[in-house]
Every structure is written in C-alpha cells, then in structure tokens.
Length: 628
Image 1 (cartoon, rainbow, N blue to C red):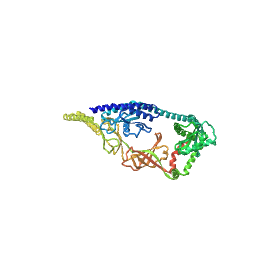
Image 2 (cartoon, helix red, strand yellow; image 1 turned 90 degrees about the vertical axis):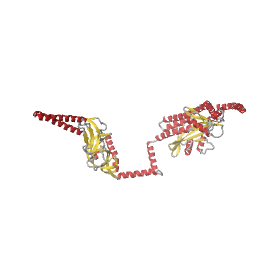
Image 3 (cartoon, rainbow, N blue to C red; image 1 turned 135 degrees about the vertical axis):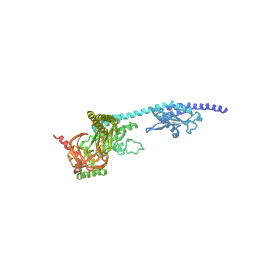
Image 4 (cartoon, rainbow, N blue to C red; image 1 turned 45 degrees about the vertical axis):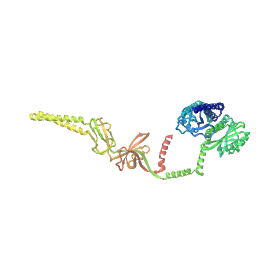
C-alpha cells in the first residue's frame, strides 16, 4: 500500500517537472515557429512543439511529398541521428491508407508504439507526421495513442497552411515563367521574317529582364555570328564588341553549357571571351545560354547586366527555359528566310557530301543498290500479267422447285452440302393428300359395289355410269399418288447445293413453283473474272493464265480465256468487264462460290515497262485532258 502511495506521489512530481520544462521551452519554440523562413525551420519548430505536448513522445519525423513522387524527410525530433525505420514504416502506412494509424498498441506486438497522421490538401496527402511514444503500461497504449493523434491533428493547421503557401508560391513562379515564355513567343510570331523576329526577341528580353544588352547569334560556317542586338537596328560586323560577343557565344557552345561570368572559384569552365565582354561592359555580369535544337547546338543568347545588378538564380532558370523555347522558332524562321535556290543547293550539296564523303555507308550502299535495281529493271524482262478478281461457278446450275402448294415437314440438306442423285433434300407434309386419297379410295369402293349391283340387275345404263365414276376415282387416286411422291424433294444429279436452306422454315408454307434449292455439278466449272477497263484491251480469247483461290492458297489452277463480255459494270468506283475462263484441270477440292485472284498472261515485256505502265497511262490521260 505504501508502494502505491509512493508511486502516486512521484507521478505528480514528474508532471510538475514536465510542465515546468514545457513552460520554459514553449515560448522559444513558438518564437522559432513564428519567425521560420523555410519549410525545414518551421517543420522542426512545429514538430518539437508538438512532441513536447504529447506525453511520452520520444522521437518524431515530418515527411513531405517529393518532386519525383513519394515522401522525403523534412525534419526530425530530436534533431540527431537518421530517420527511424519504424517511424518511416508507420508514415508509409498512413500514406497508403489516407488516415491516421497506430502501431504497437497491443501487448504482443514487437513494434515500438508509434502513431502517424497524414495531412491532406485538395484530396492529396502532402505530408505525414509520425511520432514514437514510450508507454510503460501497454494497457494504456490505446488512450495515449488516441490523445497523440488528436494533438497532431489539432496542430497540423500550422504545417498545412505553410505547405499550402509554398505550393502557391511555386505555382505563381511557374505561372510567371510560362507567361514570360508565352509572351516572348507571341512577340516573335508577330513577325514573319527572321531579322525582325530576332530583333524583337532580343529587345523584349532586355526590357523584361532588365539587361543592359541582349545579343542573339547563330552558327554560320563553323562560328557564331551575332544576328540581333537589343535596341540596335544596325551594327557593324567588324565591331570589337560584336566580335567579343560572338567569341563568348562560341565559348558557351563549344563547352555545351551556360556560362555566367564572373564564375565561382571551383568551376572548371573557360571564360576568357566572357571576361573580355565583361571588361567592355565595365566589369558587368555576362550570361550566355546556348541554343539546342534537335541534336545540335545551333546558336546562343548573351545577356549583359551592370556590375551592381547580378542575375538571380530564379532568373537563370527562366532564361534557360526561354532560350530552349524560342531557339527552335528563331531557327525555323532563319531557315525559311533563305532563298529557294540556296535551300535547294544546300540540300543537294549536303546529300552529295554524304554520298561521296566519309561515313554514311548505308547511304552509299543504298545508292549503289538503286542504280543496280534501275539497270536490272531496264534490261530484265518478265511476263506481263493482268490481275483480276476471280470467282468459280458451276458451268450449269439446276433449280429445284416446289411442285405444289404445301408445308415443309422436314429439311435434311442445306447450302454447302454435297449430294448425289436421288438423295432426299426435304419433304412436304402429305397429311391432306393422304386424307384425300382415303376419300377417293372409299368412293371407289362404293362405286365398285354399285357396279356389282348394276351387273347383277342387268342395268346397262347404270353400269356405264358407275364404270365412268370408277375410272374417275382411279384417275384421282393416281394423281394423288403422284403428288404424294412429289412431297419427297430429291437431288436431280450429283453436285453441290449452292443455295437454299429450309431448316429454318419447318412448318412454313411454300408455293407452287417456288425456288427451294440450286445445285451445281462438281465436275464442270467456269472462272468468272472482273478485269479493269484500262487493261481489258490486252485480254483476248485463248490466252492462258493462273488462278489461286483464297481457300486453297497453296494450289494454282491453269485456265484458258473463253469469253469476254463487252458490257462494263461499275463497282467500287471502277468500270469492270466480265471475262470467263475454263479450268484446264479441275480438282475435287474446288467448290462453287470460291473467290481468288487470277493472273492472265499477256506477253513478255521489260520490267520497267511493266512497273511504269500505270504512271504512263495516267500521264497520257492527264496530258490529253490539259491540252487545249
């Protein structure tokens, strides 16, 4: 009992010491928090203040979003050592779940008790605060962690507001950079010619960035030549200042980097030409940014300021971005302003140098190959063929029709089936015919009884009448038997059913004379080709050719042209003539309706004549149309 009392007495004493420390520490932290200028200073003071308010807090970290994605460490408390791995794990867990989390709250957990709270901004987590808590009694862990999360949540407004402000400042800076670049591009695009555009760009850069002089140059004949100087419409090419600026541009282009003079003592960059420009500018500051287009440095922009007006780091970034943006535009205008004969000559000379000079082995091999191909095409000959879409059809096509009006009872065949003579294709219902036959058979039986009665009573007149009625009944029975026989529709010969499918019409009616099936023989075919009107004049009867069908691409069939139909048909914007041919040798694999490509052999000609025929024909028609 005394032990408990002693513990109870020690606890208020400990709280009193903590409250005293907090009382002394809080004003300094609040002052540091209010006077913080950077995110690191503010986060450090804020984290120390929060941890001092959380009972048992032993370590804490603040992690914020990084540019490349994920989070980076912004501050830690105490400000010693590396980032604790367990706090990092807790913060990543809070980031993934987008809510406050607690780890190590249970007695059986091996992890150190810690909590993490994500700080959202516009549906995005911009920071995570994680704090480790020393809790001797794990039974009270949940309450302590809940209180710690509540304290971090209450105090997160400071950090959220600061990060929101940093985001706003960054957005404003990026907006200013984009606006400056777009305004400059707009001023350049207002001029169609290169010289006014370059002058406008240099003057606008000098005014907007408070430069004493801005010069723009492009490489010509291996050296940079100044093409525009701000606020100067004309300048001599041999002026010492112009030569010095051109040398400074060459210096930056050769080293492939931006040069700011004066430079730091630890930067290994040659700046002899820049020092000369600075001397002529009364020891002012000189910045040269090379212009990079596609895969080469083609020029540079030189900025000059007075000695007491240095370039800020942010200005350096903006000027580098502007040079990257306007360089391709100015270069495009410079290339377009050249004379057409100059462009043509330069392009041809460039191709000749690549063809005859060192390197460019692929281009040389391509040129040699092209010459060899032209020679081969001129001297080599081949068979000139006319290509045409082809379709195979049966030489004859037999129609199977309905003999009378009726209803379909069964359909055993459909289009695509191979049948033999006498095979059943379909059957029609014969119920009414059977009843009709039964009626006439009964009637004939009755007539037979009357005939026997007339014979017995010896009535010649009645005998003749009844005999006629019996003959009529026999005729009706024969007719009905014939109709019943025709309810079974059979194939007239061996062949392939090319059209007709009654399987979807079971129970449906058919009319007398209605087409039910079409059957083509499998032994006699013809090939129907559609030849373009521009090539029909080359096709004659008796010519040979070949045809390949889409369903049998591995087999060729020889054919002979038999008939040319002198009637054109319009199809797909072309006039086509129908040409019929017969196969030299048939195959059991052929089926009517197959489509393919036919080639009709005309004669032997030079390859160049065969390849150039469409172009020459078009030219003849076009020249005839244009001639007055």
